Length: 278
Image (tube, rainbow, N blue to C red; front, side, top):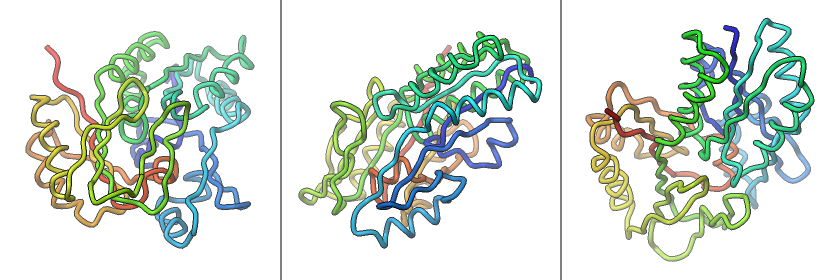
């Protein structure tokens, strides 16, 4: 493919799907105290959740340095790519977009790079990266692939039902709200609005929070796409069986990894979807 797609590890895409579409995933860094690991490469989601459960304090994550993106761009150029489209986690949640842009400036004259702020995270980001990669596989130019990513990003909705947590965390970025507050008995429901998480209501029980997600998906009408993402949620199968009839095809379930997992804690369930157009 003359155009290749790069994303970051907060996408939570299954590796097999990324490999099939030729998507390169640049890792964020995860820190448990002084111990630093590259997300997905040195710490799988399963390993992350085991360490998260044993840790007194939640871990920290940081954006990839520009050098990580630059290495990816140069490797793709060496492999024959004449263009790269980067689909990155929301700039309001991470400094990843800035790193990707700095790296793009470092390879001017080597390979053309377009950076797209997905204004999303986890399966929302992954959905945008997949759409871009499919357009690239179909022979799209760098501008066509960038436009495909931007179009899907504009239509992608992300909702997240949280379980109460002992660790108050922030979603990252100026003004972002805490994802896990642990206050009271209510279950928080959040949605991504313009690149950051905002409250979308509270429910007194788990069933009510998941009902709220289901109601929002139902209200969206016929869908072009639907992905469920989850953080070690014990009631995952029941939720998937309820939402599956609303999906345009089989429901992919993504495992939340270290980036969102550092902030939301276990038990969270979310949906990323696009309403049908035309």
